[in-house]
Every structure is written in C-alpha cells, then in structure tokens.
Length: 451
Ligand SMILES: [Zn+2]
Image 1 (cartoon, rainbow, N blue to C red):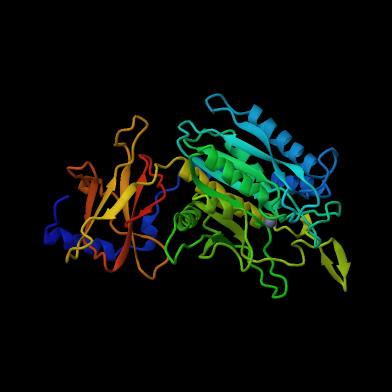
Image 2: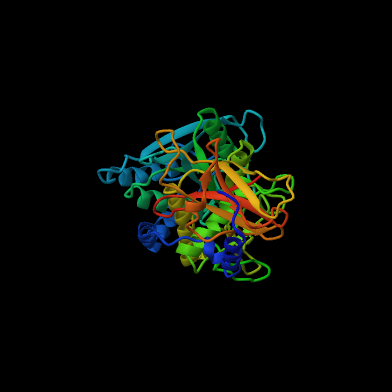
C-alpha cells in the first residue's frame, strides 16, 4: 500500500486506541462448539477406570498378558480407536491405526534388558492434509522405584488423563472431516527417559511429516496442590520454550491455545508458562522441539505429590497413589476442550505466512512497513481466499493485540516482487509485529513474527 495520508493515519490510530486485547479474536465456529459439547465426562471416566484396571502400564511390564501391562494397554487403545474408525462417516477420510515399535535398553539407563517397546499412532487424515497437528500423551506408568515393572501403578492422572484426552479426541474427530490431519501419538517410555517421544520425533523428521504443531498432554486432571492445599480447577498451564531469550514458534502456539480457549472454553484460563517445563523436569514435547518442531506441554496448574509416582499405600494416615478417585473429572473435561478447540481451529486455518519482514527496518520512519510471502493454495499459487491480520505487542507484553482492525485486506498490496505489503502507523521501535493468515470463514493460523 502507499503511505497513509495523515488524516487516515489519525483515524486508524484512534480506532487502535479503542481496541482491547479481545479484538484479535475471531468468532466461534459452531462446528467446533458442537464438537466440544460432545466431550463426555462418563466416557472420560470409563477410559481412566479401564486403564487403571490394567494394574500397571510400565514400559518394562508384560506385553503378553491380556489383562495387565503395556501389551494389554496398547491392545485396549487399538480396540477403542478401531471401533470409532469403523464408524467414521462417508466423506471422512478413514482413520488409520498403527502399532509401532522401538528398541530400548541398549544403553542401559532405566532398563534391565533390551526390549522392543510398542506405541500407538492414530491418524485422522484431513481432506487437505498439507499439515499435521499432533496430540501426544504417554501410556506408561511408574511407582517410586522406576525399575519396578510389576507393582500396582495406576497412573490415573499421570498420564491416564492425557491418554483420555487423546481417546476422546479420536472418538469425536473420527466423525468430523477437517481440512488438516490430526495425529494422536500414544507414547511409551516417558518415565524411563522420554524414549518413546524421542523415537516418534526422529521418525517424524526422517519421514518428513508435515508437523505444524505438537501438544503434549501430561497430567491434566488434578486440581489440588499437595503441601499448600491450593485448589485451582479453572487454570491450566501451557509450557513453551524460549531460545536465547527470544520468542519461539512454540510460544506462538501457546498463545494460540490461550486465544482459542478464550473463545470456546471461557471458564478455563490458559496460563502461559514461559519455561520449557517444570524445574529440573522434562516432558515428551522436548524431543519434538529439539527436532525443530513447534511443540508445547499442556499440564495441570497444581500438582499433587501424594499421587505422582507414588506406591499405592497409606502411611501416617495419608493415602498415596495415583488413583482415579483423585482425578477432578470436570476439570479434566475442560482441559480436553482446550485441546480440541486449538487443534480444530488450526485444522481449519491457513498456513503460517513465510518471510515476514520489517521492510523499512533501517529507516527513520515512524510507520512500520511489513512484507511477507503470500500463503499458497493447493495449486501452488497465492491463495486469494485468505485474509491477513497484523498483530503487535509492546516489548514487555506477553500477548498479541490486533495492530489494526480486522478487514485490512483492501489495504494489503502486492509489491513488484509479489510480496504482500502493509504499512502500519505504529513504530517498529515500540512494538513487536507479527502477521497471520485467516481462512475465508475466519479461522486464524499461527502467526509469524516479523524479523
Ligand atoms: Zn507423566
């Protein structure tokens, strides 16, 4: 676009000064709202009861006993997902359920032998499928002794809650066609050293999966903090890494989850935690981040150390153990909805604009000229159905605001080099800027920060 006349610039600034942060948000999509309404507390309770009944899901536990152990757990997940896949409606690309194995224990560590470990991958193919959205949770459980593969290790919250989130996602999304592919990874080996997710991250890299975003759900069903007795059942944390103190793609994803939760699950507050994980601890998102993928961890706000990794027992009048009766099911249901809202919105959204730049970075100019490559359609040509939104935030702010009101499309111009260009009457010295694309029906994609 050409430089704004002073009158228009003042009008835009006036419009801007009236905006609140909510203005970045788009309207709720009834398809997503309907899907969220299908999240069923009784189904979720059943999954966790069934998983706990398997006695242990330890990575080194039996793979041949049909009643207990990791083998029985994988078979259970296969059965459940297989039933839903079979009832997928016509017009919905058929879900795929694949059991995969990796070898563990060759380097010792938390293994007493070399073992072939099973995992499960459920793919819900999109009608477009250019991008993949991954939900991940770990099947395996443990007690205090991480090598004890036979003790009762119920793992109702850690990580039965995350597994229940994935199961409910497969149940609901196997019936709804979405544009992009959703993949649910049920990983093993988390408690032995994140081995299963490391295996999946390497596989994704080697096989060139078009991974767009990864949400690892690990412990999302507890609302009580042991020791302090804080009870927080309307907050959930999303951990996102920083790199050299800079914003990362993972952080854009975390903000996106907060934004979609604000639209679809307003009674659940997403707390952005600008750390890769809790103190001295890690999770399955780590190896996806290391492979260069956009990945975050979703985790309950309060943790109960009388549950996590405990032997089931009573000691000095205190009950220990990660049993289903301690899971806060209404809280877990809300967290499943937070996941579904973000994933479904991203599955209907355009790609992230590439090469977003501040074109006048070196100029003494109080306008900021942004350029970016247009998002391409299936035919490889610029997709004319998408619109763009300019986001900004002050350098100490954590969340994006709309830099301009919606509907700037008529003021976005293509340059001679076929780049999109927009001149924003805000100083590049005072704000960070980002650009994101929105689908014709208003689903926003992940933003790219202007460099
Ligand atoms: Zn865990």
